[in-house]
Image (cartoon, rainbow, N blue to C red; front, side, top):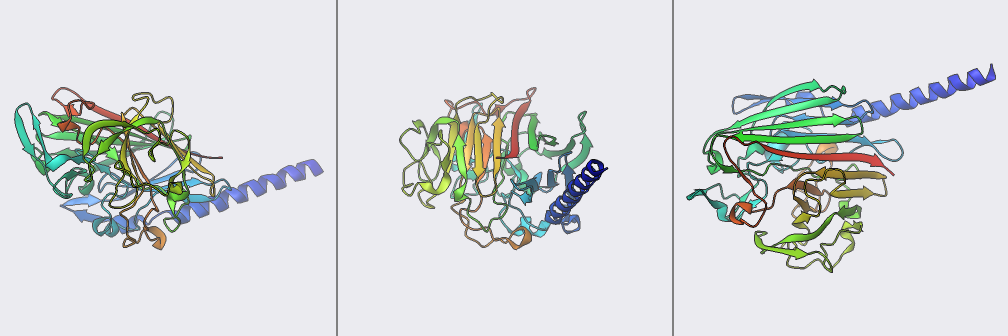
Length: 381
């Protein structure tokens, strides 16, 4: 009888804790009503997906964007580990690159120009005379079509599609772009980017999250312990345009082959780093491109115990430590987006590859399909 009573009491405690954790996680969700809008004649919505283990991811079809990623910390307390805003208004007036898919060409193209099959194309110059993340109205700033369903494992899937017309932001060809998000039962967010075109065009789609494993941008992400499986990086000029050289990381502040605290290197004024802002904004050349059996990068926060692994089939990873953030944006729950309070780790091809034939190919041609896979997996330790 006593044993039975003990088992029943233990079960009640577990259920109560589970309910408490669920309520706490639900309290971190943003309100779907604040995302109901019409932009460029298309309806905008918020979508919520939750796996069997309580991981919650919220999306909006404005920019195929991830709004929230809610996972448990080492104490079982839910944390929202991605920057974002409480309403669609925040994404229209605040940082445009908070959680979207960017493109057609993520990262930079020098002078916004490239020559393809003997034709020189001029795309939008939206950053100091260069092209960044697809231009001032790239795919991150349009409304996508969206559908939700479950895969054969019962995992929630959010699939978004956008048809980019010929000439949009200066790019050639009509391009159909699809992004498939799967909230997997191992607490990972799997992302598949796809594209097809009717005219040759460079393409480099990438997910652009600002991550803070503290669960708030009010605490610096410089305390995160970062590992990147890369022995070299693409050297750049002061405008962050690649020179074409691949520089070894050994002996530089770019060496993250041993897990290292992001803010532990006081002397970061090297040519490879964003000198103007005093932080990291660099593409790393991954050691095992195409191999998704091992992480290309990991990041850990001792205070919360949250551990993130990134897997990809792409050759590059952009590490941006948030030096240009100035505290003017106020995000979810009133959190200010301070300098060095969010880290972007973006799986990708190399910056300015259309102007560097020695870099991995980025040209998509009719009859081909562009596919880019990435996984962001969360656990605790």
